[in-house]
Length: 311
Image (cartoon, rainbow, N blue to C red; front, side, top):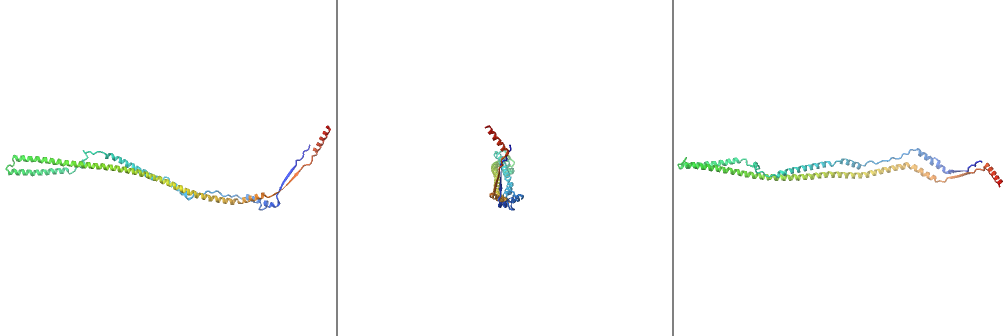
């Protein structure tokens, strides 16, 4: 049995004659597209704005400010150490200032160095007065005709005893007076010294406290200076960030403009291609149907006759 050929259909799209120059002409879409494809596509590079002047100044200020508090801190520590030393000296003075006066030895440095000369001079004066009185006794004895007698001897012995007693009383009185005066002067000096010691200890204590407070303030000034430096750095960074952002915006705008200029021919070609695709085009369709197959027809006739014979 022969096979029949299938039916075929052909659709042909035809471009209108008046549209062909826009596609194939010298300024048509295809020549322009080919020309653009052969040209290098030089797109502008991305650029990053550099650090602004305030930012650079902030960097330098931040670096120079690192450890800037150390001098003030060191001075503050030194002042506090000085205050501790002064307080320690004051504490060392207080026990000595609170000691009691020693009357057995305290007066010795205040004794009048001329005391013995005064005593000897007083004794000499008393002796001279005694000699004068003895001369009077002798003169009286001569006048009475009893010179060298017992009465003269008794009077002279009594006079000598009186002279010795007077010298003893005078010298002991002078020494006692000198001792009392030296003791009083020594006690006054001791009390004044102790008072000065306590005042000195108090002054040193106040000095130590003041130095300690000064040290704390100096350390605080160092910390304050560091904080102010950080604040200045932050302000400069804020200003610099705004300037850098503005510069970056300018670079981005410049690149965008260059990019648009570079891509303008491609965009124009695409726009022209879109318009061209919207133009009407002609279409034609051809359908081919096959003729009857002789073998098939013969087989059909034989089949029909066989059916008739059975009936």
